[in-house]
Structure formats: C-alpha cells, structure tokens
Length: 319
Picture (cartoon, helix red, strand yellow):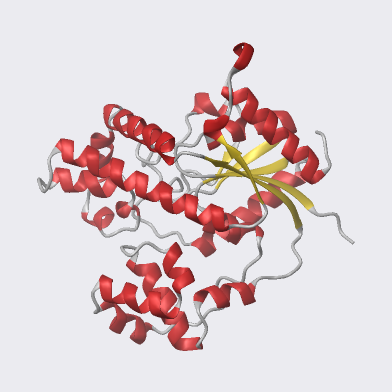
C-alpha cells in the first residue's frame, strides 16, 4: 500500500487567528501553507480579505493567494484541482502541506476527493429558476434539501439555484449527491484543527475591531481602485466589505453605515462558518477564548502547544 501524504489543516471563523497559528506550525513541522479562502484568490483584494502580509508570513511560502483577477471566475472545482497540485508539489519537496482558511467547502473539495463535476446541469432550467425571486428559491431549497439550505446563505442565489437544479434533475438532494460522489479511499492522512470560541461575543468583538482597522487602512480606496463595470458583475464584488463599500461609493449609504454593514455581514459570516465547522466530523477544537495567561506565558503559546499535541497524537509523528 502506498504511503499516504500527511496534511495539516487550520480552520475556523474569520478573525480567529488561523494565519498566525498556521505559520507557527509550518515553522515547527517544516511546512508550506495552502490558503483555503474563497476570496483571497483574487488579486488586488488585500485589505478587505485580510490577506496575510509578507512580514506575517515570516518567510513561509503561501500558495493559492493572488492567483485570479478580480473580474475572473474561480470555482470550487478549480480550487480542488489547484490545491491537489500544490499538495503534490509541497510533499514532493519533503515538506508538509498546511491548509489554512475559513472556506470549509474548499478544504473538503481538496482532501475528500469528491467528483465535483459529475452532477448534471441544464441551462434552460437554470434560466427559469433565475427568474424567480430569491426568497421563493430559498423556500424551494428548504423544502427539498434542508441540509443544504442550512449551509447556503439565502442571498447566495447561485448556490441555491445549483442545489435546486441538482434535485430537479436527479431526484437526489445536493447533500445526497455529494455524499455519494465521495471516494471512500483517500490518499491523504490529515488532522484538522478548528479554532473556536466558547462565547461568540468574544469573536464578534475581534471582528468589529478588525473592520474598523480595515477602513482605517484604506479599504474604500482599495474598492475604488477595483471599481469598474466588469468588477461589479463579478463574484468577487459580492465579497464582504466590497459590496458594502460599493454601496457607499454609489451614495446609497453613508460611510458610518458602510462600516456597520461590514461589521454585521462579517459577524453573520462568522456565525455561518461556526455552524459549518461544528457540523464537520473529525475536527479537533481549540477554544481561543478559554486559555489562561499564567506566568507571562501568552495565550498564543498555549494554542500552539495544544495544536502540536493534537498533531503529534493524531498523526503519530514529531517533525
């Protein structure tokens, strides 16, 4: 039997400290980091997506960041293909791939070996569905596939329509189709660490502070530089921070309203991420807001030590 490739993943909600932990683990285990963030793939969208800076990388190579123009298209299937190539590239150098990000669907697509392109499609059916109002579409999905509805935001009309389309064409829910399309044998041996919070208000406070910092760092100018007809039609323009600032630039809301809208959207996104990861199996949780700081030892050191203990135990290894 071929030896499986070891993989580490650091996941969790936005603003939970994933990037810093992933960098530290890469230094300890000799790894390189593969981003699993659906928005950080876009070039020029740095402030609003909270991309890690060169200084914060501490010399650790990071992959699948800044690989697509903001006016371009990039699907989960595209990510899965690119991520698998990076896994092979990194492990081929004798290093360990370390995934880091909050897009759980992207991570699963890369390491659970799903046949993402097998589900049928019908352009005419999709056009008819696109004519329906979003609330009606979401009610349709909730009635046929409540599991998918719980994972898809009502405003994400593209994904709602895709889930309905699969059901109408196959008689199977997207949840059922995804489960059946998984390959039972994976070439990877992985350990997934999820940064979580006992009290969501602690996370929301961090999100509010980071949102204010983003605006202070020039988020409005970043969006203004991206703004064009092609960008406004793109998936990237729907990203949190970008959609709200575009509304501000159009004069539909005030600056203060834009800041509050980004805070609210970010908190709601974090809530959905927590729901997603808490439904995932085989995740090792580290609760960021329950670590003490005795004898001058910081919270971050405790988190790193906890992660190292989990990795060594789960993969039976010490690098």
